[in-house]
Image (cartoon, rainbow, N blue to C red):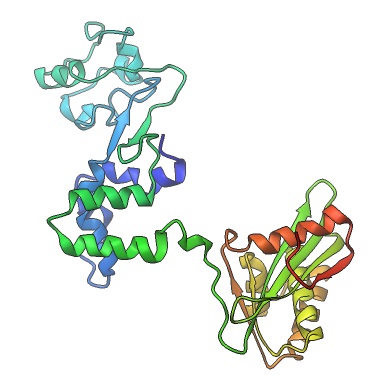
Length: 324
């Protein structure tokens, strides 16, 4: 079945009667990519199919038949039928229409009688993406679907290839980008045990060639996730300073931590204030420090080093070469 987030973003397209329902078609400021997506809307809609499983969908107010909502096709709905679900008129092998109080036109009767009935009482009704065998939507499968359907539209094909290769390719989320020449990059992460509130911090420093310069793991006592991330940043800067490095890019997968440091927000809580003060004091030792956020999938090595503090009981340890 289509996952909740993907269904909200893509499967809901199937409910639109036209691209104009998305509200951006006439916007002159819309990006070329978005306009191309809207042009491909009808093709994407065809890739989704609603599967009746338990049949809990509303008989009248859901588009379970893919022929439109039935309440739009009858002059009125009898009050006794308002709460009916699809499964209420299915006996396991045939549709049962004679018990309905609502008068059905020949069109509505044919829609129901030619629709497949509920198939599994244990699963919810849901959208099924035809682009993959398991029915789960993915951008890569959508790209392949569009390439197959849009061969006559080279401009749209080009746009989707560009999206896929630059942003959505499976390997794109796994790329670590090196800093510029003469700069060094610190990747940091925290580890946190909820029931004990114990913190760990870890990270590594690499140069513009991606060469390992130094790694570190640090046990940080009691706190919370945000404080652990701030302390990881602080430890990274301290290690970089001890090595005499001057131009630093510090990357963390915590948006909150980077935002606190970069935008100089006022915060409540002495622990945060102290950690932020020490980080800002450390910045004075460098020619330049830039803080950035990074995807968690790229930051896996830093997370591993943060967990090493718990695994081996390190209060603070530096790694001169990658740990095995």
